[in-house]
Image (cartoon, each protein chain N blue to C red):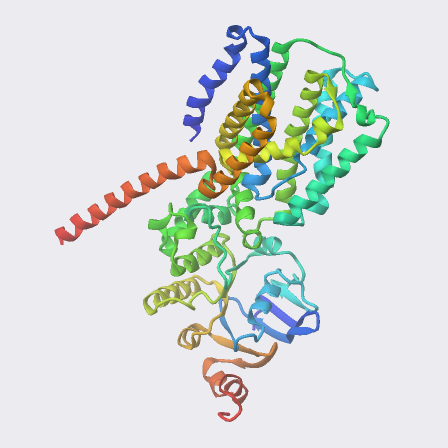
Length: 241
Length: 327
């Protein structure tokens, strides 16, 4: 097997006495979609924040493209090719949708004109082009989640972290987003995705990593994971297992 | 945008350049000179307050730093004004760097309080040190040439405006600052380094403020801790920016002109009721924050773009209608 694009080596993250992520290890291969699964409070978002540089790991290392990136700030990681979305979306509310994407485009296109041209391309790809001039605050939730993806894509990342980009959308909107993700995969993007909607995550992920109380309890294909007694216990309780 | 700014800016600049030829009354020229100074102070304040989202209640300290640096270099070191003035700006910039390191980690009210406290500390230092003349302040050699100060003030504020217009409205820097204002975590994920950008904004705000302080010292020929390092500069700049419209460059100009005109008229005709001036000013601010939170300019511009949006919407729905009819 080729050198993995991302290696998470026994990462632990504590907040005071609370261990949010405990000794988690897994690898992501180039071009894969990995689903990160787990009940509420399992540590998925914390792990995301550690990988994208918002938290430094208490222990363990994160290797991205062969380099140790643990503890590097998010803006350095964005430059190295990691794009992320936020579960609680973070639009620049006072600015237009176009301006939001232009700001993200500055990373690869420092000139205003080039950034704007690139932003329009992203708007077309994410289906936001007709809303370019409205303020980001006036978008619907679906629109804001699209905008999150658009901003991450404007960074031209090689590795994309998607934190619940489908949750809260109606089935039509969800299908559109899934389509977009599959299109990205076709283009060779590596994706780590957190999602609660099983229909979505089971279908688009090549492999799944399951967390519970901060620890990795299972890893494998959707079918393998769904049969795993530990996973069933975590989701449905002991009796069901 | 660019064409429009030249179309508006050039005639205004020409009128201002020609003004002293028409206005012979030195009192009036003096009032206009001070109005221009306040425009500059409000603009510089808005770099941090409006574009970056940080209310700097220590703005006046940079004004005083520039004033005192210029005064001390001229009086103690016998530097010529032309050299002392840039040093005032440079020292204000260095001051921003030093003050920014601890304070720019803070947000919202905490940043406001910290910068306010720092400016109090600077004022106290000016009060106890020998080199600043303590509470008695400093006298500068008088250079009685109102036209010189008018043109100097105009040149500095015009250059500041042009520079800020380029950096904040044309180059990527302005949008990056706004991104930090809106959400610094989100901005970080997009490859922006908030610490660096905030520091640049802080220095960009402090340098013109320091230069204006230096001109003020030489123009008024007397500075003391109360007049140049008090709360007045910060408070007045804040009021002008909020009233005119934060996060724009036109807003502070409008705010500075209206508030300064009001203040001057009030002091000229109703000087017996000075207390009333502060009460009215307070009421105007409270009302404008509640009813026109975007300031005068922001509200006007918002109304205009809303109308445009509606027109566009009406247009596009009409287009859709005709399309569906076609089907």
